Length: 152
Image (cartoon, one colour):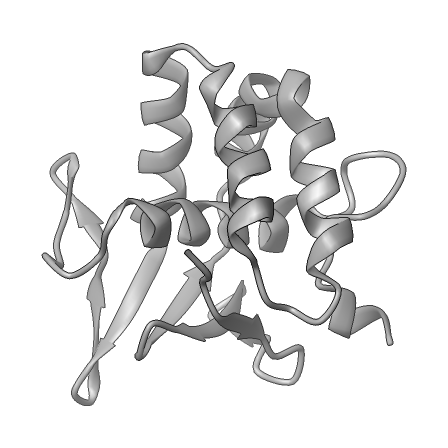
């Protein structure tokens, strides 16, 4: 299954001191907000052992589109996490995502669950990955997690 989406570096902007990025995929527009530094720390320490697969996924995206093979490598990395760690990472990342709903922006995740029935597991993982990429691009050594289009 292919997920089509692209972070537009021109849509990244400052809002109330928090960096926001907008991403569009599967017919919806999402905003990814900054995670607080302590959440970034806790997510980073949980995913650090699996970063090779995340970095491979970023390297292969290139044009901003995630293929099924890339998502499979990301899922493999997430598979190495305990259930509690995976739920923490996904929940913290999705808690900072908003989806355009008419003229308003609605929470994607609240009370430990997705707020939109049409978001399936691949979309949930994609939003998690993009939130990690937006928030922690400069932290990991080697190939940056930053959007490949932003580097151009």
